Length: 249
Image 1 (tube, rainbow, N blue to C red):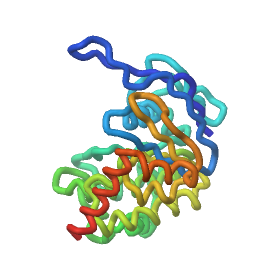
Image 2 (spheres, one colour; image 1 turned 90 degrees about the horizontal axis):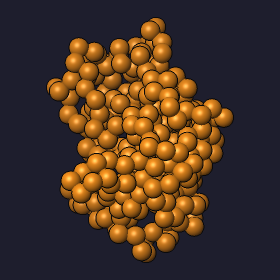
Image 3 (cartoon, rainbow, N blue to C red; image 1 turned 120 degrees about the horizontal axis):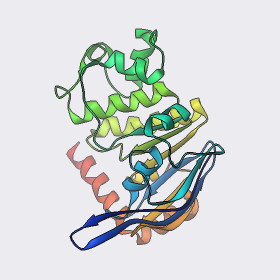
């Protein structure tokens, strides 16, 4: 489905040029649930943004379903079947949730019933949100769930989620696990999630570990996860976060 070859990306800082991604090569096949994890600052979110077209790489190539999309805009990639859920969801003042779901689905006639079904799948009471504006009156967790509902409506071939658990309460986080399974089974596309959460790692087909801008490990969950649970500081952090959430609940 998507093939990344020798992808590099850097930024200028006070010390000069800083490489964030360093010759990253990766293949994600059709109908795959892949999770990218690793230490903070390792390049995970940057890779997600490059794949979605939010930022452009300095070099390397991205091929999606046989088409080179390296120079495609985020809009053209969306049309090609790639969706991206931001770590911090975007607000749309003046646009109601129903309108946003219709835009995502590419269907101006999307029924209220179908739109409500998408909201219900992400744990929102549809009648309380369908006519709300997607603005600052909504909490971060509400915005996050609405954004995930738009990904459901879009039925993308490749859905990219950057830390979807951020700002989500424990019940909704548990519900998200089922949402991801549903997206994969319904669209038969691939899901790529950036996450530290052990619960998400446990349902992945493939786990990719990025450290210092490079792929440190990748492979089937059953091969990579046991090693991570024993040695990875990133997944160690994840276990602590999961436990804290359980205690707070």
